[in-house]
Image 1 (cartoon, one colour):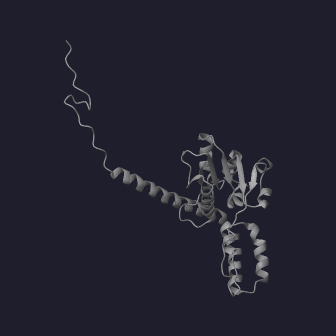
Image 2 (cartoon, one colour; image 1 turned 60 degrees about the vertical axis):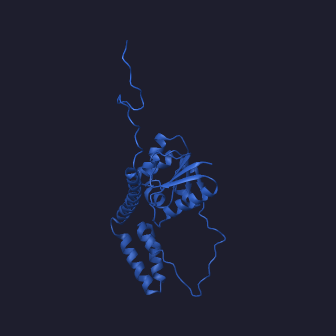
Length: 245
């Protein structure tokens, strides 16, 4: 049984991919008999391995773990750190250099990595329980991914969005495609997305801090055990000294 610590930039209650990945991996590792802790940051807790999701957002924990711990360090490239941050982020690049092992979630990601990093990288596909079942809908339905592309702010999406707009017959979808093309083309959209991610991380850290403060408050209000009764000499538990002859 190993003690494994998972660091994710998404706090409790978040519904994004990083939190889902951390929760699912923790469940699978616990099912294999390991002890697993999940948190927003590594603060020196004893563990046999650290799994850090997102090379840029978890960089502080990665750096601290490398300096203080003598255990395997695994960095998971979870999406935006690979396609958006890695080319320009010194923190993301340094995280990959420090990692003993790097994990990506699909094979195409390997093409984005430098040769030294690629040598220590494994592809781990996200999976689903084959026993899951559902009743398929009777009518057709469509899933829109336009909003996700806008949030990423990647200008490479503009070409495919234009082609989709040319053949789109649904007026509602066409309107959203035009809005997406406008939003992605606006200067500073990527920076706004990054700031939004940082705000989300801070919110998660605030929730975790409130939880810790609540635990400390409980300890503070718990009465201390009754102190030992002092003897006449003023020293607890010590007999009174006699005079020297």
